[in-house]
Length: 442
Ligand SMILES: Cc1cc2nc3c(=O)[nH]c(=O)nc-3n(C[C@H](O)[C@H](O)[C@H](O)COP(=O)(O)OP(=O)(O)OC[C@H]3O[C@@H](n4cnc5c(N)ncnc54)[C@H](O)[C@@H]3O)c2cc1C
Image (cartoon, rainbow, N blue to C red; front, top):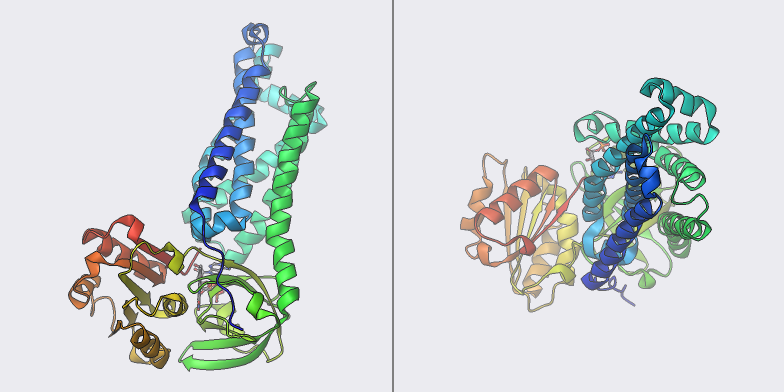
């Protein structure tokens, strides 16, 4: 029996989720207003204390939203894709950190004004005297340091694994933020019901993270019990891993999607890497195809047959569900062919797609026969381009595919390739909603 496709994305559900989250933000800000009386506002330091509470409530609410964005809730992920969710996570982050920094500054000024002392002296007193403030300061420190490390130019210099391990500290910062807020926050002290609802929201977010980032992957990995069945060379520096597993007909995945793979061998098990399926599952087999670009991908080729493999996903909105029209162009740069190839399998026989596959040298034209067959079955055309960017500038795509501007485009591959192609598509008038991209780095 063939494997099933993933469920159809339902953008409406994301609209509803957005409305719920926005209402929650409004209510949270509202809580800060109801927690302060006119009398408190007019007292020395009252305005600063109010602003401190307001920015604290808004900042921690946005922290919660950031957690939800990376919890990979399937019905949201199917619409926005993991890259879309990460984009939002990164967009919200500067606002969150700014609000939390403002919270600390306003509160310190407020307490200093009410105690008629200096700001630095007051900060030292707060942290040194009240244990809950020390807890809060630790959480604040972690948040700020991780925020700085996440700035693109800084993050680029860190090894991805180091950055990821440090990022896990954010869960500690979140626990500390929550702990001090419910004990000291004016919106919660003496307001049992509000505190319970707030706590339930945080517990719900923690539950979603545990379910979707740990529970579901463990369940799926146990259900399918994947092992490496074969490692097959496809081209210099490119190889396929054929996995064999159980119940793969129950694994819902669409062409173009990817999993985070965890190879359960010494030195490998602790990191998960994303790889697209390079063909739809053919139970009991599943294939991924990997280009050796760094230490992890280079070492993978040496893993012995029989190695257990865990999976998290499927992820990605780069599927045929995203297509709004019948005229489609699939454009792959190098190893981006994996997503394009499995996506091609999902296109109907009547689709007449144009497939463009760009590589830097002829020996990288992997899966030639497979692509030719699939394209032929669908009455389409295949263009294989060999050469560097200088030898084949992206502008020449329009000459190659005369109706490119009228087609809906799916582009996959390395970041620079995808950026150049999508920029060209926009230049020739393809609307944004008809350009779908899968960049092979997150
Ligand atoms: C959605 C998606 C689908 C992909 N599909 C394929 C595929 O089918 N075949 C294939 O060969 N490659 C694919 N990749 C790229 C692949 O994940 C990276 O090449 C690989 O993780 C590099 O690991 P490395 O340690 O060998 O190289 P490194 O030198 O450590 O990394 C090279 C680059 O890969 C990216 N990268 C590294 N680790 C990760 C990670 N854990 N998560 C996300 N990005 C990472 C970074 O941008 C880094 O700059 C895909 C990437 C994404 C995001």
